[in-house]
Amino acid sequence: MEKELIVRPIQGEERETWDQLMAAHHYLGLKHLVGESIRYVALLNGQWVALLGWTSAAYKSGPRDHWIGWDEDTRHKRLKFLANNARYPNKNKIQTFQNKAA
Image (cartoon, helix red, strand yellow):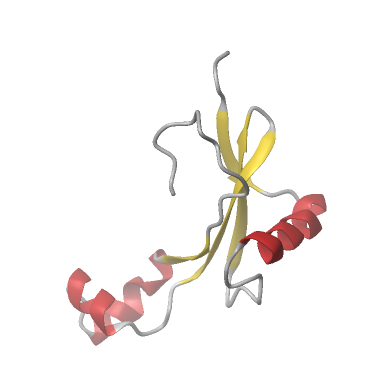
């Protein structure tokens, strides 16, 4: 049987389920996703197997800005193009699916 993996943004009616699963399966819980955010679900053969939460990038991060090579002016202009992976739990262990995140 071929495995089909789909990663997509959640739909409005899935928000409560996403929030409940995130609270139950992420070691930090759900809390609040700060700033602009988007929630994704990964489905394997129609089953929810992972959740992803993305938020606005932190306004200041010295190591990030240094690594990218940003000065203050460039950071102000380009920050809107970054996102922060705020949450990522695997809902369950999938022994037969190779190359997934741990």
